[in-house]
Image 1 (cartoon, one colour):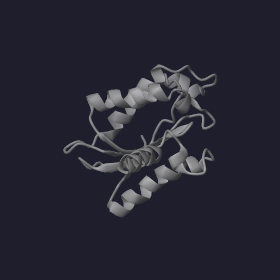
Image 2 (cartoon, rainbow, N blue to C red):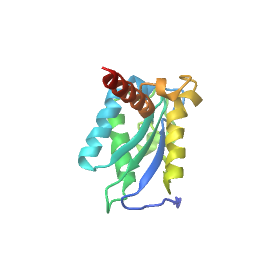
Image 3 (spheres, helix red, strand yellow):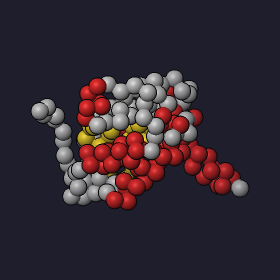
Image 4 (cartoon, rainbow, N blue to C red):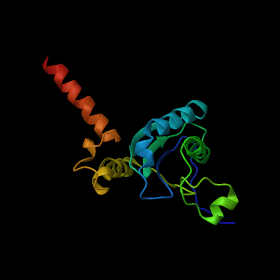
Amino acid sequence: MTNYRQTFVPGGTYYFNACLADQTSKLLVQHVDLLRHAVRLCQKQRPFIINSAVILPAQIQMIWTLPAGDANYSARWRMIKSTFSRHVPEPAERSQSMISRGEKGIWQRRFWEHLIKDQDDYALHDHLIATAPLRAGLTRDGSEWPLCSAYRRRMRSNETSRSSVA
């Protein structure tokens, strides 16, 4: 059995990247409401704070802060991925290993996690999220991608500046 190195810090703040098995898929943006529902459902059962997030066509990147005394981010990702997968169509092609394991083949088996160490590390990973739509060739600026927290921050900033002028 593979021994993955993971850092479990109760109440920690983590950066995550979870990808679909088919990197050419647009499933996450096509079913963004379902993905949001899966995340909200998970948050109700296993609370956590989403500090920053971006949804791209075939991957999702997030920064979470877990509750004090809780470091079980794997259970949360399992819940999000399985809830989403149950409600989308099965891919046309699945490998024999996926079929034998009973996997639907929507997501890559794992996700990438990184424990945020300090404010500079947080700023770096928040920047990675904000610029992900640009790196993916979807926009010229992450704040233009509506499925990015940088977009929401820009919208709130615009609303605040309009209301202070009025």
